[in-house]
Image 1 (cartoon, helix red, strand yellow):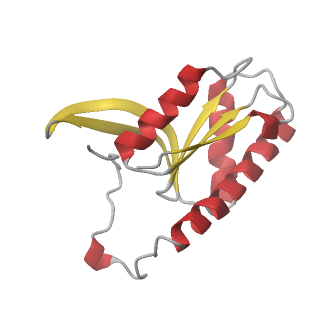
Image 2 (tube, helix red, strand yellow):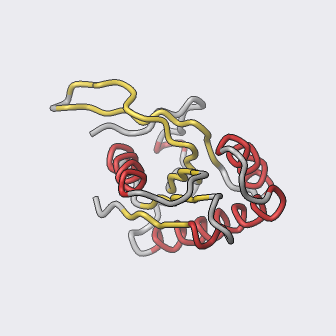
Length: 152
């Protein structure tokens, strides 16, 4: 398996200024982050309403995530490999927030199994545990949020 490709480059382990998080601490941090992400989605829908294209919600989410001080990248290439051979870019995740949560945005009538499978694929290839699938067509938006967990 391969991971994410980050344009800005990630710091090396020797550059890290904070100690490694224990497995017990990691879920708490991902949950704290997901709470802030959901808050951002609520604010985006409060301001924009429903009925717009996904691209409008994505642009607004970028602003809201930044205002909340969350580190994120948008349109992140997710690379794949097979038996150690690089297959190249398999997907593009809408957002990766705090290097731990993949955020996939939709503006559709209803989620389908395909949407969940898509996000789970992103998580598996990226080696991440938590993804949020957010449907801005649902009102209120919190009814259109699904947590997808990759058990690795």
